[in-house]
Image (cartoon, rainbow, N blue to C red; front, top):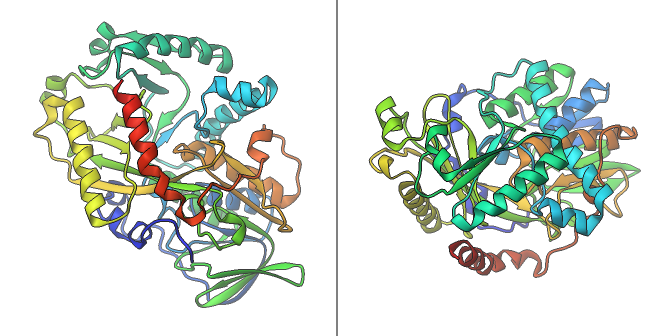
Amino acid sequence: MKRVYEPMAYGPRPIEGNFWNTTVPKDEGALPFVEGSLSCDVAVVGGGYTGLSAALNLAEAGADVVLVDAKHPAWGASGRNGGFCCLGGAKLDAGTLERRYGPSEARSFFDAERLAVETVAERLERHGIAADTHSKGETMLAHRSVDVATLEQKAREINARYGVKCEVIPADGLAENGMASSEFHGAITTPIGFALNPLKYALGLEQAAISAGARIFGSSPVTAIARRNGRWRLQVPHGTITARTLLMATNGYSSEDLPDWMAGRYMPVQSNILVTRPLTEEELAAQGWTSHQMCYDTRNLLHYFRLMPDRRMLFGLRGAVRATEAAHAGIRAMARADFDRIFPAWRHVETPFFWSGLVAISRDFTPFAGPMGGMENAYAAMCYHGNGVAMGSYAGTILAGLALGQPERRPYPELMRREPRRIPFGQHRRMVLPFVNRWYRLLDSR
């Protein structure tokens, strides 16, 4: 396996302090591994939102589907993210999407974004998945006074593009909305989306897929993929899987050579999260932050945070470029320093949980769900730019339709069908991240 980061990124260390693991039974998600030879219609590699969504749709349609994960479902980003189910999937703003791809194609993507959120909500309800949902949409906070005018313009654009009414909150209205912090100068709330426990959602998808007839296996890393006699053959440590159709759903945890098509088509980027102990009523009042809205700021290297139903504060950020003990300690210290600056009344509050994971971005900053060029009956989906809860789930439904040969009835934007271009510098492409981060920090400080 050829991987982009140091081995630590793909081992247990980054999630030793994962808060979500404390919210489910320890044996939750325990699955058998593949033994012997299996045959199926569709083989799915990767047990995150994309793979599980695809497996669920396929099983409900009557297909014989086998899903394998190197560790266990939700071990990767789907079990360790911030739990923001919201608009997103591309790293380009709406105006850039319209200029680059045209108004019609951008409109299709905007429809897909909104339907992605609705897809998650529908699955939670239909399958009775209790995922601790909260937040009425998402709130964007201006970290500089000069960004306030930009937010007001953005609110007008969101209203027009998504048919909603954004709430614009001036600086002097933040405290009365329970968002008191001298760090911010205004905000807008988009009434689309909600927050959830990402691990409970993923494990709920897993159980729904199993109930529908999908065969799901853990501890079964794929070590080789080959095409033989018109079928795909996947090698795992204790057996093989033969399938008519192959779906790759490994995203930021992909390998450069499984299959070779993946090489250079995605950039894994670390995201890091800390979670506090439960805050008291007095502590909430002291800071003046009582809102349960999921929030993020206007930085390029953004912060994202939310007060959860149990009164713990979740706080995330980007910026780490290596997966080593020193880098892990360094980004934790950075996260804590930023947390203390934004919420100074909570400087004494313990943050016992801290973990990291990999999201993926593409060269064109748009998500992908479609055929892997030159590979018959093989499809992949990836690169949700940190918004995989909704868009990863949606991409899984697209993969299922492709595997079944069914015309897509939901919006399937052309920009998501475009094969991702390879990123320069191949397996060493991560070396550009320090320079990109320095540039973003410079922009954020102006």
